[in-house]
Image 1 (tube, rainbow, N blue to C red):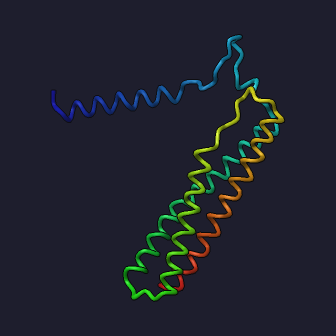
Image 2 (image 1 turned 135 degrees about the vertical axis):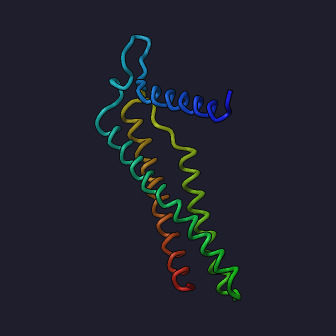
Image 3 (image 1 turned 45 degrees about the vertical axis):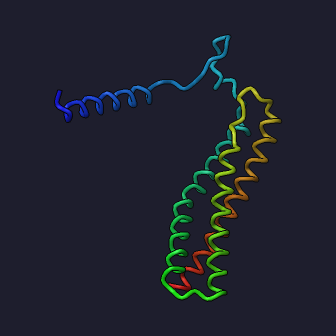
Amino acid sequence: MNPKLKIGILGCAFASMVLWGCGQSTSKTDKNGTDEAATAPAGNVGKMETQIMDLHEKTMMDMDSIVALKKSLKAIASRVIVTGPDNDSIQANLTRLQKADDAMMDWMNQYNEPDKKMAEDKATAYLTDQLKKIQDVYAEIQHSMQYASAYVKLKK
């Protein structure tokens, strides 16, 4: 069989599986046949989950900026004669950016969506803690980017 034809067939098969999977229901049923999503705590828990995920997405959009700022700082360090204070500033900014990046990765690794069967007060307490954590990460990222951006702008 022609290799290009094989690739085309495999591509179509993959696309079909993806489209089929998108149409599948993701709801789960318990042993009684009850839809677990229907028994999930409503109201405050759902709103908090949405708030956390919205802030997570907003924070993730800054990750590309962190990479670009690191690259700019390294470029400045490589193209100019770096004095002691400049080297300290470059290293301080790189460290701040990396720490913010690490904080985001750490938060993502430790966050778990609360079990739908968890008591609403426990879920709310957990989500309140997680919201505070992601807010702190967001603030750290904004702070590190602000300092690095100002330094890069000054040195360009």
